[in-house]
Image (cartoon, rainbow, N blue to C red; front, side, top):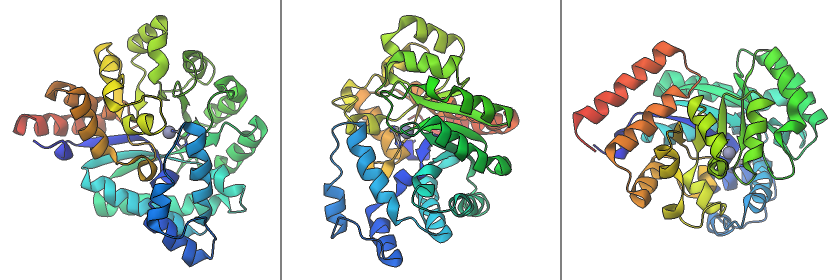
Length: 334
Ligand code: ADE
Ligand code: ZN
């Protein structure tokens, strides 16, 4: 069996991070937006990052080409087609409304475009989905609260809230009240923590934001008591191996701690984060990580199962997907 054929769920994917250079150029032309690149090659060459912030600067600038409902549809549809090629069956997608509302794009334009594509993804590609609104943690808690207000009429289309952007210096505790209000409104929650930030941020995300999953979380291994708790409570970690190398969290994929996280009994999943910027979609993350860490078939199966178990799908859907994973691995050994 090929890794590509494993039924997958993707739980850590920023839709703005799927903006391929070709689409960026096309939308810049379509919308008359000036970008500091003359060609697709020039854009690709700019994607050398020294840390999270050096990436975020380029990523937020690139998002300026996204203007209309059709643009957000095209962006999301292109991702879904790519995901289908990797046998992705379910996606839980982040979007960053503040990146767009700050530029004068209406919240509903963003949400409607993404949502239309997600509906088409289910009817045409059979990919189910959930949408997660992320607050930008480098902005204030008041701004996050104002963004939450915009989301309140859309609990039918937005399933959960999350927290992303520049981690260090912006601990989860800054957003305790925002997440309290979000949970009262019926949203589930997740948060980026322990990517560049310390293990204490993971503890805060659990204790103060009451998150269901930790996005990244790779620095948890620095705190043995935290690891024990994450294992005991089976809190999923949505790990993004190629992202971690591109943003220099690990120097090489061979040095990534994913196998150690699995060995410790943590509920680890593999995801692509911002695939247009980091050199690979979920299938490529599986393939390259398997190779670099010599993951065996059982480990690959566990990773695939964990993603469905960690999803926000109802229990009977999870069971159905787990049976599909089992069938794929039973068909021929990996
Ligand atoms: N936004 C998009 N990708 C991100 C990442 N890897 N960490 C934090 N914020 C992000
Ligand atoms: Zn992320």
